[in-house]
Image (cartoon, rainbow, N blue to C red; front, side, top):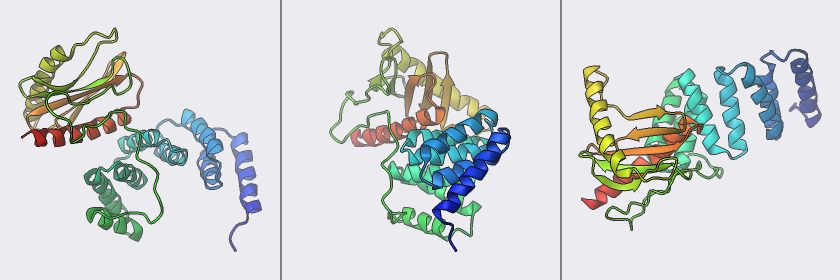
Length: 283
């Protein structure tokens, strides 16, 4: 017979006692799962954070953390946790499913399909996962139940009304943060960046950005690495991500240091897709 509410409560008590007796035990994973299933995301979050403080490189702990964050509707945080899991274990089924879910809700169907297909290949017995792949490939819904809203995107995206050099790349997160789009010659196409003191350095950054993109391509060829997709730079005060929306354009995304790298890359990817669509409309 199914376990009653009292049965679940007893399991929580037993697991909590085990964890209290041995805080270094991996029992925190099971305790966090049970608390989450019981609808206690705050308690589950406290447990998993305690566990991560002892096991910061444990993939299953980061995966559990991500699922708890989804329950709490912190989708950007969940993305970063699943991104961490894939850095630790590139073939983690749950992380691919989770990131595929987030990309789907953000409207990034190609990226969602990539991660869902990866998960389906890793877990060929999951019929529901294979059905999700087919539905995303066909443009349909992948879950029958309503899904959460898209992850927070710090970068406002261009609309069909945008034109000229007035690409509405507003700041990602205030003061020194922003987006800058340039062509292959270093000509500023839209957006802008400022120093921490507020000085506009968009033109200087545009010229440097084109050179960085050329050097990145040259280095990738010399090392036989294939085409590069993005560069990440972490400094004391800011973090940056550089991408190529098209073969003849480069996008710089800058945000305050301390922001999770996966979150910055996710926002930059979405901005690059919108920049690419905008550039295509100008041709």
